[in-house]
Length: 338
Image (tube, rainbow, N blue to C red; front, side, top):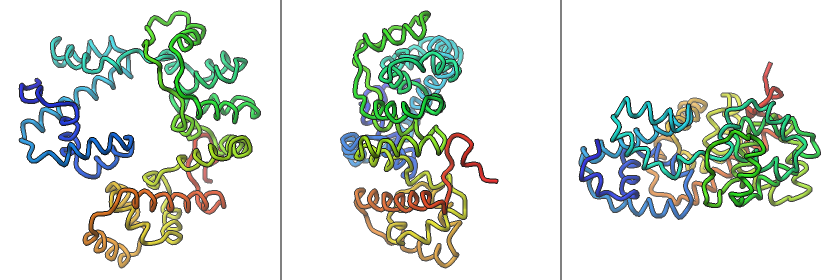
């Protein structure tokens, strides 16, 4: 139940209380998904929080938990399913409150039915469409779906479609609606009248992360010829520092040897406990002791310095991968180690 004092909190205040409650490691991970402007506003809000009483903290966390559950129910079975489950669990009034808070995000996203469809079926329908139409549809699909479809398209089309997804900005709702209706006549949801933001570099990175390594190389090689700056920007985002947890011990040990200790220290300053654990696991006990001591006495550092250090480590990782000295797991089967 939402209490009176919680209702008086603004959205930013609730977000600040939530991040304080989640702790520094989780909060740092959340920050990676925010824009610089959002980070500035939220940091300012957090710095202004003097004291949070336990009841307000509990209420905010509970509200977040309920909203997260609602979104999960929607992903499983749509708004109707979410409404039924929430009403049974929380009662009709509280379920209505939660769903109303999610009004903007609860609009059925375009191509919602397609995300539940088999990628092969979608491929069979769209393979002969204009590349821009294919790019639009893929940008709305889940990354694994889009990656599989992109892998199945002719090689001469792959880079062009990847580029179109990357540079896609906004698409008029009437165009989305028209393409959507063609793809599925029985779609009953109403497309939001706002211009829908889709595509972009993050979208194509997610798609490329879902393709096999050969397809990725083919697309990036072609993009380096067509648009070198775009290719470089995509490559920078293909692997982020926190993804180091997906590497094997041998690969991590090689990375530790090739990276500057100062870069590793700065990167570990704000990294998750999972990342620290796997890095320390692959260091000598003496090195771990030294690092922990230096981290303990390290003063405040600029976020920009940390990001630069992590970028240099990622550059080392990509260089080692390109030379075949480490393996980054990808979609598809060409990275299976036997």
